[in-house]
Length: 454
Image (tube, rainbow, N blue to C red):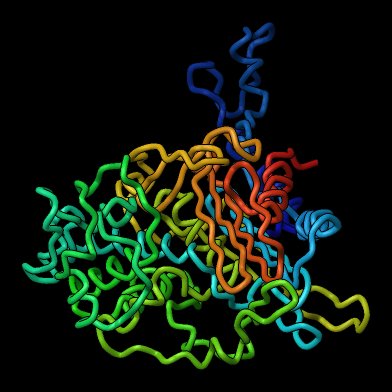
C-alpha cells in the first residue's frame, strides 16, 4: 500500500488552512451595532472579541490504514523458513477488508523459475470455499434453493433410501449429506448412477452433525448440482460472477492456465505434478465433466485467492484503493517516470455477495471434535475457531494434495486475513489442525497487522 507523498500532504494542509481562514474572516456582525466603517465600541464584550478570532474546524480522525509493508512480509518469510523446509512458499495478506501485501520464497520450478505471489498453484481443498461462494451467489441469483432436495436437480432417483429427509446443497456444504465418501469421479451419467444406487448412501438423516464425515466425493456432487441448477459449467459461472469483477485469474480447470505461470507441485523431493502436466489437463465442455476438479483442483495464486478472502472478510464487498499517477525522477537515470499512488481512505467498492450470504456461510452449524486436534465449528464449508493466532476468532480452511499444503484464514471483526500456499513442505500439522509452516507465518503477520504505524 502507498501513502500520499509528503509534498502533496503538505499542499493539502496549506489549502485546508487557507480555506479555514477565508471562512472565518467574516463581515462584522450586524448585531454589534457597528457599520462597516466604524470601529467597535471600546471595552466590547466577550462576544465581540471572539468574533475577531479565526475559527478552524477540527480535522476529522484519519481512517485506519493497512500497516504491513513489503519488508514485514519478506522478514516474516525469512524468519519462518529458518525453521522449515519447502520447495516454494507464497503468501498474500488482507487488511481492513482489502488486499494489502504479498511475498514469495523458493522455486515455482526448481532451478528454473522462482516462486512469486502471482504463481498459479493447485490450491487443494481450499477449492471447497470457492464452491461455497458460488453456491450462495447462485442462491442470491435465484438459481438454486440450498434447502431443496438434490433430486430437484438430479431427478427422483437421486435419493437416500434410508432416511426420511433428503440431502440438499446445504448438507453437502457441512459434510452431512449422508453420501459415502467414494472415490472422486466425473461424468454426469456416472454420477447420476451413483446417486441412484442404495450402496452409495449411509443410514443417517442428512444434516445430522453427529454423523459428520469429510467428503471429497460430496464436492463432486455439490459442484455438479450447481451446474445442473445453472444449466452450464460452474467454472463459467465463477468467472462471470466472482472473478472477472475483481480482476482475478483462476480456474477449477488447470488446462486454462499456461505452463509458464503454473508451479510444479513437489512432494518432498519428488514431483507430485509438473507444471506442464497440470496445464495440459483437458478443459471440460459438458456438465458433470468438471466434477473431479471441484474437491481440490482450483488453480490460483496467493494474491487472487486473497482477493476472494477479502470479499468474505469485508461482508461481501471487494474494496480497491483509488490510485493516481505522479511523475518522479529515477535516481539512477534522471528520467521522469510515473508511479502509482493510492489515495488514503478513497476506494472503489464492488459488492459480489450480500452481507446476509456471507453471514450464512459463517454461521456455525455444529462442533466437530477430531482426535488429537482442537475442535472446530463447522459452518458452510468454512471452519471456525476462537482464540487462535492471537485472534479472537478466525474462519479458515486447509488444503493438501500432491505435496501442496495450504491455509486461508480471516477475522471478520478486524477484516484481516492471510493466504499461504506451500509446495514441497513436510506434512506437519499442529494441535489446531492447521499446517505448522502456514500457521507460524500467519501468526507473525497477524501480529504485525495489529502494530500501530510509527
